[in-house]
Each structure stands twice: as structure tokens, then as C-alpha cells.
Length: 347
Length: 292
Image (cartoon, rainbow over all chains, first blue to last red; front, side, top):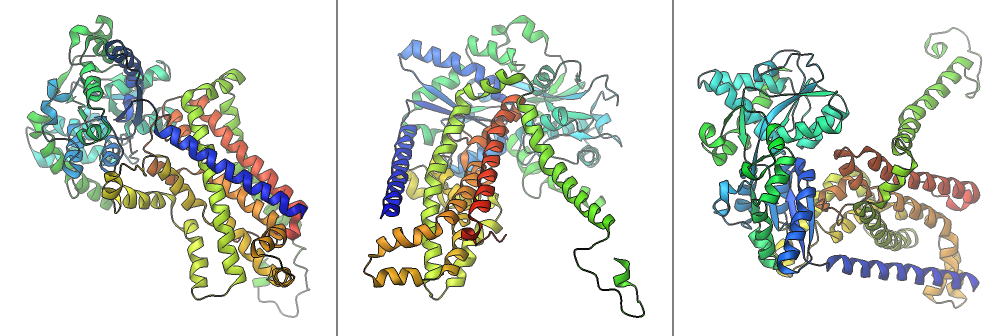
């Protein structure tokens, strides 16, 4: 019976492990007030800097210690996750259409979300620029250069990445201006750029890694902040930022997820968190991380000086707003799908 | 090999299959070893070189990060729940398949193998579709405040799914081969059902069981695809080690990424070592080899 005894002990051990695990689970489930910020890909460093400032501010005002959890991925993928039940208290995504998707598909955010905070609920703006290899060997200066034969372009997939949709619309907006509003010529122009981009990563950060770490491609189309961050991370002697004469004004918006905060009882702190983004403290951090603050007066002068001046056009003016741009270009069977399909047919 | 194809008159000299021309032999060995070196050993070496690229200090500092520790902790918890559950399930399944005959038995065997043939991403998505807010059980779960996907239960479920077959697949051939004679003898001599299981069946299959558990554990800790879909990627909360590795890599934190990856690689090496030891020591008792 010795064997039996040993086995029983083993069984008891296994049960003890199980019990221990379930206690741990229970503990993890009931942490102190925690705010979940579901954000897009390149804002990791930004919110890592902002969160401690807000936690300190909230503690000073209410005496309550909170914890802020973060989740980062492609903007479209994050919207999908919130729709499927990721219990975000706030979403800080790359573009309005992704928050609209949450409104339409889950009803967890009220339709008037963009009116609830200043500047169309965008605490900062950014734009789309190019990152090229040191010395700019392919002489890339403007959007036209991206459409030339023999240039390898790195940009993420507009279906999953918010930044990629800004990239696409920036190229489109430039094309419209160049061809004096001729949609067909613009389409050919944008198609030529995407023909040069054989790999489409799911998020902006994935594309940066493809270009900078894996060394693929001649030019990366990306967020201004992402371009600065990459050249800082990998050393200034490896890459150059090229600012095209004209690009798009990107407005990444933020919103409280009403359905979730009401269920969790975190509305007050979630709203305070988003309002905090407009305060002098947060605006200074925003500029420090290479975003364009909604209130430049709160930012350090040397931070603002790094951001180049260029002609910026808006989605509202060129595309009639995000809802329309999303439907025309990125919905199933939209212009982007057509471009991809024709592209595949000619390959 | 040309003489086998060429139309030759007369009877070709009989040749043992093990007596290939030396050139063929060395070519084959060279290809096998070269392939292993290029695709298995080199990447493994890279993991450890990158992990120690900035010295041992930076390597160990990587494990001091709260997010890294949380990821390690979560991975251990998930394995601690999943592995015993699947061991129990594998035992039940193997037992019923090997010792009884019932209609639909072959269907059950096929079903056990399902996780091997389904892409992990699909396994993850299935759980989102069933337990997600827009899913089948979504309204019921959210009405009761139960969070399954994008939380630990979802990760556990997805991991159970992908590690499902390991223990059962080890035990089924083993138990089939052993048959029911010893159990029948024990029962005839008056042992209880559970007593028979503990004193007769379990000792017979313990090494096979351990072998299956080892493999299930390695997969449970290393699973990426399915877990990635249901995780929600909340830092310090729902990231397992493989997910944390991806995050660190994407944040240009190459040393930490590879330091954590080296944990997984280390786990794989330990598993491999134990597996080899088991095979060498108890080969005859682990008769049922994995068949995929």
C-alpha cells in the first residue's frame, strides 16, 4: 500500500495547488480601484509618463490611491476588443472612426462622445511623416517619391491600424491637391504607393520594428511621434526624418466607455483622467513625447521647436469627416479593397 | 541510386539497405545536422546571446520589472490550473477509450486530436465568439458581472483547449496495450474501484502520464496565438510570458524581451532533458509514443 499512499499524497498536493491558484485568481480579480486605458500602438511611452502624474494628482485631490492599467495594440483591433467585451474604462484611440465603431456595434459609448471634451475630444494632434535611412540614399522628399518604381515602402494595414489609415488619407489628400481633385488619378497614385508596400503589419509599432529593427524597406510612413521615438531609440546616426511639404492633421481622440464605467462605478475617475490630459502638466508631457499639444502654451519651448511646420489638411475638409472617409475608403469593398485587389491582379 | 532506375540486364547485386554509398550517407547526415543547426540551434543560441547582450546585470534586472514578474506569475498560475485539469481529463478519456467499448469511440478519439489540427488563433476566436460581449453567452455573462474573455478565465480556457490532447494521446496507446487483465484480477480479489485505480492502473501508467504532463506543461506555458486573442493585453494583468516577450520586443526593449524568452527556452530545454531521461530510463513503460 506504499504506492497508494504516495499517490494519495500526490493527489492532495495537486488539490492544494489548485486551491492556491484559485485564491490567487480571486485576489487578482479584486484589486484596488483600477482604471483600464485601452489605447493604440505608439502611445505606450506617452501614457507611461502621464499615468504616474495623474495618479499623484488624483491622490492629492481625493486621497484615493488608484492603479492605471494599459493595453496597446492596433487601434482597429483595440476597438474590436472593446466591442467584444474588453472592459476598458477609457479608450484613447488613433482616430474617431474606431470610437464610432464601438458606439455603433456595442452601444457602450454615447454617440455624442466627441462633444464631451474640448477640441473634438483630441487632447493632442500629430501628423504623418517619413523615416528614411541615414543620408536618404533614395532621395525621398515628398509623397510623389513613394510612388516611384523601385522604392520599398513600409506602412501598416489600414484595416487594423489607425495610423495606417492616417497614412493612406495623407497620401490621398496630397494626391487630390496635386491632381486638382481628380479622383481617378489620385486613386492610381495611391495604388502605386501601396504597390511599393508588399508587407502590411497590423500596427504602427510593428511597422517601425520591420523598418528599423529588421532593416526592411527604404521608407517608413508613420506618425511624427513614432518617427522621433524610433530615431531616438536606434540612434540618430541611423535614420533621418523627412517631413513632406504637406500632410494630414491627425486627431487621435479619447472617450469614456460609458457602459463599462457605469457597471464598474469608475465614472468619476475615468472622466477626471481624460480631463487631466488637457491640464498644463499633461500637455507638457505630451509635447515632450513628440505629440502636438492642444494647448501649446503649456509645453516647453524646446519641445515645440522640434516639431516642424508644414501644411496640414484635415479629414473634415478633404474627406467630409471620419464617418464618410471610413465608409468610402476602408469599409469592406471600399476604395482600399479595390486598390489591393487590382494590385494583386497585376502581380 | 541511379542503378535502381536504370533498365539493367541481369540481376543487380543485392545490397543491404544500410549500405548506402558513403557520399549519400554523409550528404544525408550533413543535411540533417545542418538543418537542425540552422533552424533550431542557431535561433536558440541567438536567444541567449541577445539576453546577455548587455551583461548579466541587465539580464537579471529584466526580471525585476513588475510587469515581467506579473507575466511569470500568471503563466505559472495558468499552468497550475490547466495541467492538472488536463491530466485528469486525459486519464478519464484514455481510461474510457482503452478499457471500454462504446458507440462513438472513434469520434471521441478524433475529437481529442482536434486542437492539434485547429490553428491556435481559431481556438482563441472561438472563445471570443462564445464568451465575448457580442457572443453566445455574452449577455448572460455581462448581466451577472462575469468576465471570461480578456481576463484570466479566458486565458485558462484557451490554454486548456490547446493542451487538451497531450496527456490523453500519451495514455491511450499505453492503456490499450496493457489491457484490463490486471484491473480485473484486482477487482476479483476484492479491491475497490478507486483502490484498483491507485494501486494497479496508476503505477502502470505513471511514466507515460508524467511524459504527457511534461509536454502539456511546456505547451501551456509557451502558447501564444490562442492566448493572444483572448488576453486583451492588459499590462501586469493578462499578459503571459510569450505575450510579454512580444510587448517588450515592440518597445525596443530587446534585452528584456530575450531575457524572458530565455526563460521559455530554458523551460523547453528542461522539458527536453526530462523527456530524454524518461525515454532512456523507462522506454518500455512509455510504449505509446506520440504519433503526430
